[in-house]
Amino acid sequence: MKRLLMAALIVGLAPVLMGAGGGANPPIPGQEQIARNPKYKAIIMIDVHPNNTTTAGQGTVTIRTDKVSSTGPIAAGFVFLQGFSLGCQTGQALTEQRFVDVRLVEIMPTPFDVIKLFAPFGEVVSLGGVIPLRSPIITDVKNPFCTGTADPADDAVDGPGIQVFEATIQFVVPATP
Image 1 (cartoon, one colour):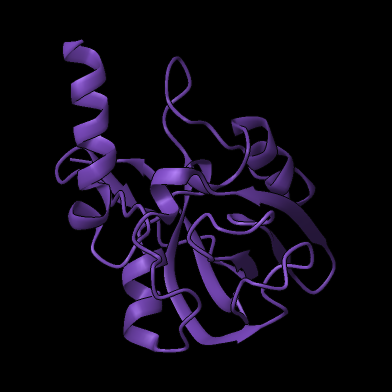
Image 2 (cartoon, rainbow, N blue to C red; image 1 turned 180 degrees about the vertical axis):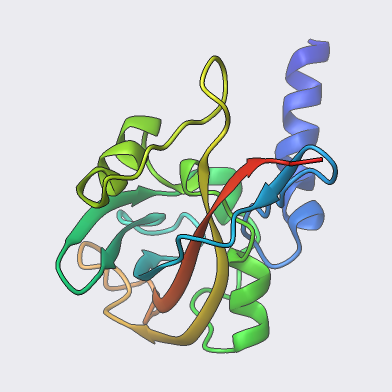
């Protein structure tokens, strides 16, 4: 009973704790830092309806360089979307609040999807453990806009609800003394 009560409390407080939605997880001071290079430019598209559509939380992240591109799925979970009661917004400040310092492992379906996304670029991704941490994180967002219909399976849901923005992705690595 105590566990059920605690779980309900955590889920109920999630929007308050996360403000406008999202799941910022910045590097831990003294233990982690953001590597200066490489920096990847990406386009992120995600349905930010607050769990009232069949596609809520789903989307894609596409990274392109001059010679290589790679696309992976996004499947942001229930807690990540809790604070998105405003749906898709075009404001720069709100988009930063929602997505800057979000590690890709938090919004992609599996750690393997994160690893596959960076494999074409020859990047080693490690989420910790035996191999030192090297985890991709969104460090900047630009040019947010909204597009798309609300929910192709439900005409009663207001839209548009597809958030699109340019992102800079870097890597969180262990701090150096």
